[in-house]
Image (cartoon, rainbow, N blue to C red; front, side):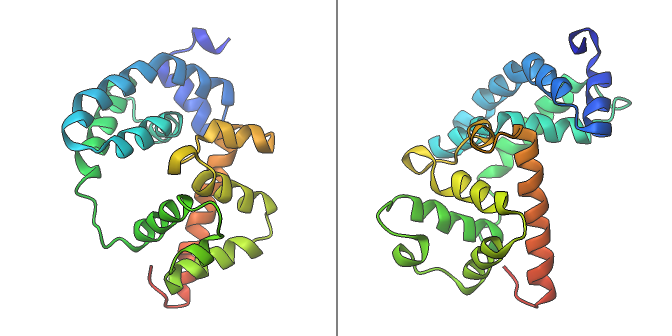
Length: 198
């Protein structure tokens, strides 16, 4: 039973074989810390939208924290608290010229007009159009669904939570995240190779 394991054991299971039960146990144990740190540091430096988005990504952040965890340096709770604090304090000062962020900001804008497709309702950059084209033609058909649900189908222009996307595809939230992150890396490399910076 994973509920008898230490945080170190749980993170090891997640790193070694993406054990979903171990991840769920870690989320159950430490969601409170994540929310408390977000309340403490987010109220003064984040907009309501940013707080909402970070809160919605709680499970994803805990998963990432597990992958990065080094038990020789701190307890997992401390590691997660520091990671959450860092996210809050750096979110507002993110580089506004980061082209990936800018392109996905365009997605958020497009969400507000549900009567049009993204390229009809927005004047999209060439690089963003290229990203959409790559996703449309990707060999993994789940990718298009994941991006569409994540960025275009959230309520009131928000990002849709991973658990909701997972239910649609009959996958784990972790599985959807893995597909998403792998695609982001592939797209970045592909566009970099084409000498189109975004």
